[in-house]
Length: 171
Image (cartoon, rainbow, N blue to C red; front, side, top):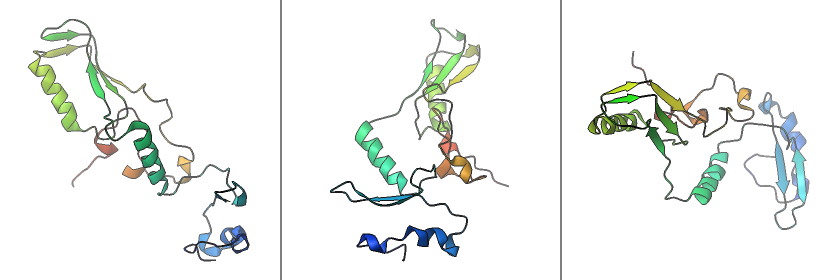
């Protein structure tokens, strides 16, 4: 069967053809086809193994995010300073992130300019980056299945990611 053709009947679906096809050696397949009206499983193979989702998973993720957060949602990234104002902050300045995927060095520059406009000239205690909004797992399940592929579209999950987790260099 061609992968591009939608099967019309259960008899036309042959998962073994996919698994045994030499064109797909080295690939792992997980599939489950369910009849929507009844919920009956028509065919399944490897459906419980942890695999990297195909790119069309991004559509499901985007729909879920828009449904949950709504289009008006804006991520926050903030600077938090110890009590007391003046030209010197005593104690650490905390940069706290909440998962903003669009945070850029330009945003950090704007935050620094706000501090300067507020009269802050020195920070005693350094700057702390607070990533606690998410857990310590920075990569999704089955990430190791494609080693050495740290592409922008596979960036780690973090409460603070800067410039889409991309560093551009010119030689």
